[in-house]
Image 1 (cartoon, rainbow, N blue to C red):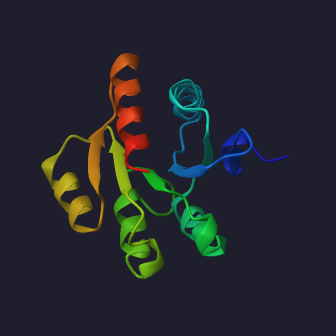
Image 2 (cartoon, rainbow, N blue to C red):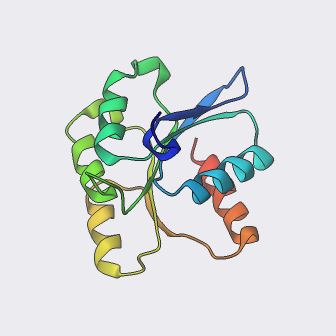
Length: 144
């Protein structure tokens, strides 16, 4: 049986009106995000994928009518990082309308600049406080 971090997880409460795709490889962050997204707005379906290449591959299997309303990417992911994922997604115009957020612990302007140039709608530093994280989630949901 694969480790829980090596599987795709789709967490939803039916019927989900909109879905959010999250590239996150930290199980603790995933659990916290699941809890907080649910507390802010439980109508969203969340899909977590913990590997950059698998995330791109997954999107390639999603029909246009089932594409997520938002893509949130941790910068540091296995196989492809957030910036590399953005560059891959730029190759297909069907993803152009989807807001993409990089969410990272890296505060360097170089990463921010490169990600915004690669197509990120925003670059957010992961908040330390839960209250700030709730505000961040509200902001993310507002992009859908």
